[in-house]
Image (cartoon, rainbow, N blue to C red):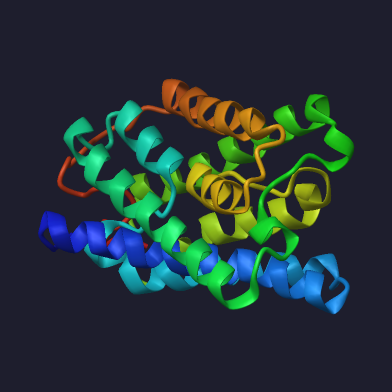
Amino acid sequence: MTGSVAARVGAEAAGTGLLVGIGTGTIIEAARLGGIPQWTMALAWFLAVLIPIVLFIQLSGAHLNPIVTLGLAASGRIAWREVPPYLLGQFSGAFLASGLLLAVFGDVAHLGATLPADGNVVRAFPLELAFTAALVASVFALADLGEGPSRRRIVLPPTVVGLSTYWIGPWTGSSLNPARTLAPAVLSGTYADLWVYLTAVPLGSLLVAAVWRPTAVDRLDRGPGRRDTST
């Protein structure tokens, strides 16, 4: 891992901005087109996570998500002092991306805000919690094993996000990320059932952090950006 604090904040801002821009931009465009197949939406979100990981994993670890940073700190994989600058970058990038989409397209589809289908929070809460836990587990696997020589492992988190989008997207919007949810919600004024995503998602992260402790930690790794020489 390399880069100053300012460089890591910038990388997290740019990476999270790409994630939100590509992902929620696809939602906006789908609404403008009258809908797209769910597998296409899932592929867009897979790429929305994969692209910034490829670009920024060596600089900041490419957390791209406050609950990923929270889980890494709570589990002891990074130091707590790393959390504030990472969150600053992530939320800044998300709001900048949503602001740009608002300026270009207007308030279409609530800027891609996450909303439980039919207002069913009883269904949305456990689904968001479960898939957030799966996402954090995939990040922990990457953090503990390192990227590996072929870097194939970096597809783990994007794959979880893609599958989540496909399976639970129609029911919850598939948040798994408070920055991704909060930015379009605030800028579009869409606050209905926002509490579901701001409670279930962090809870899913903390549950995994509580049970999956690292066997060895280099606190300068800053998460899943560590290289590994093993296969």
